[in-house]
Length: 372
Image 1 (tube, one colour):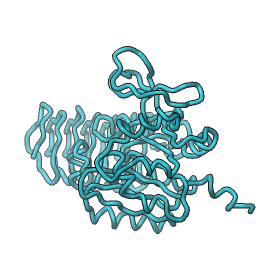
Image 2: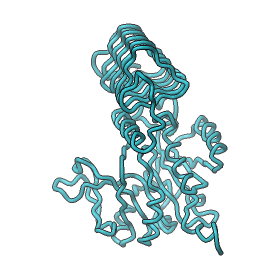
Image 3: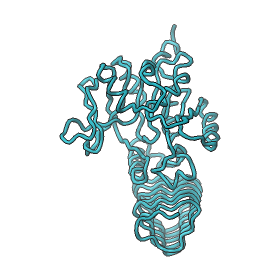
Image 4: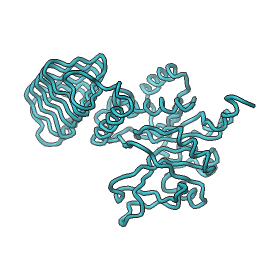
């Protein structure tokens, strides 16, 4: 047959996103919203992934989650309709590691005659090269493709050793001498045969399934081009935002702000307002409905929706959650993270404070502290 049906076997219609637990590393933000819904560069983290999957023809996305979250179902329903796809939640009664969720979602992954599927770690931000992965996977003919990314300090990670065709030889955990500087990037494409290897019990795909596949010569590595970050904790979330903005400056500069107060790469939602004599940037994200008063300086930070920043306040290297009220002449720095609806009074200094939702801060926080 010709046309779309001829291509259909090459095009996986499904993807599984591994969300897992409660996102404790990203508290206090995840006390208000499940981690996949926390805004990253003005879009729920998981939507960066889902929209990229839709672009290569994925029509059914399954999220493997370790807890029930009504807010997640409601929010994803909206996106389902907007994108014209199915989004299903697959609930784990007990934590199943990184491989168990594939067994749990097995029926959904192979129905409709589906032969292949993508699997993603929910915390990974990059330029999602799904099209190149499909081509590479088709070419090598093995059971699995994993994306790898280059790192500066391989001794902190498990590294992947592979030959010039990408065939993986072995995995080395935290190598003390140099064997490779490529690590698993948490983005995979598998043939459905992998499901025969995985039992419905807590299993690590990295430690158990991948080494088996590489021994049999069935697993291949494709190097990611461009940026990559696991944004599951605050300091990496900030670095990841900066990488995303730098990538936008190169490829989609139209989305960045041209406001006269802006310096460097800055994303400002169209409904946000910025006062006079501000200095916004470099590397700042300002969400919907945010009000920035006069004379404010912000750099290397994210301000989430509906927050208000008082005049002459200085914010660096921090994340301000939704609906916060920050007074005048406040100084906020040192990877401070404010949960939802936090109020900070005028003229205070907050350094590395992790402030839980709905708190009012009336005195300075000079050293990194969790404020309950």
